[in-house]
Length: 260
Image (cartoon, rainbow, N blue to C red; front, side, top):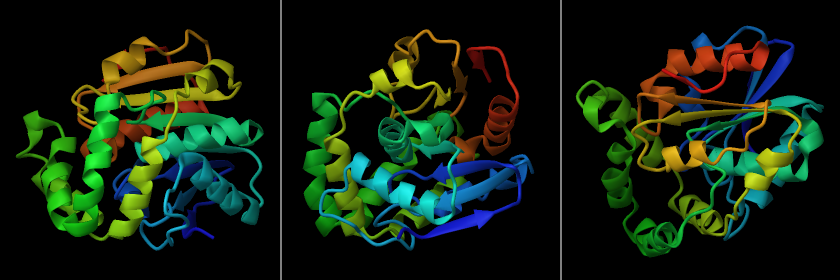
């Protein structure tokens, strides 16, 4: 089973899924700002942190099944599920398979859209460098995920992100990239899921086509979206604001389409 950490005794269970080349430590900055009404379940995804690789190609749906095993182990039947980047893709896979488990689904700097052909080609091209020169791959890519207008302010956070990424099993990263290439369009999940849907996005996110994603969200009353003045890593760049949105949206209600 996947490595996980459970913290807090709140009545509402918030399951946190990190992104590609991350682990459960990425939530450290946000955690103090999250409401005491949450009980947190932080999961290391396969091939990341202390979780083993589960397949040569770790599809989002396959990993979603592993996430469900953690919930079943903890006797959790109704949860709030939040996924950052790749964790969001896995959350969508979970919502497709097990919608009855969800009180809410949060796409946290993630997308329901599939990779376009250019992005797929980039991922496939990265296979060899991830396998043979992982450190170079990490150092070339991670800084670009932060707001370019605040690189000097975020220098310490970028270093933290690099350390976390470099600690990742490169073969686990490879299996995850292969899985992400196979992603399909998941807009239909947002069209049909009865649970509350929250989308938190970054204005300067180089990994997600934020404008296109927000523009094409289904027009449903259970969907709320926020665009923050940051890059791809709101948990490091804007932790208190992200936590405030999560606390208020998942425990209460706020107007649609606010910009921070």
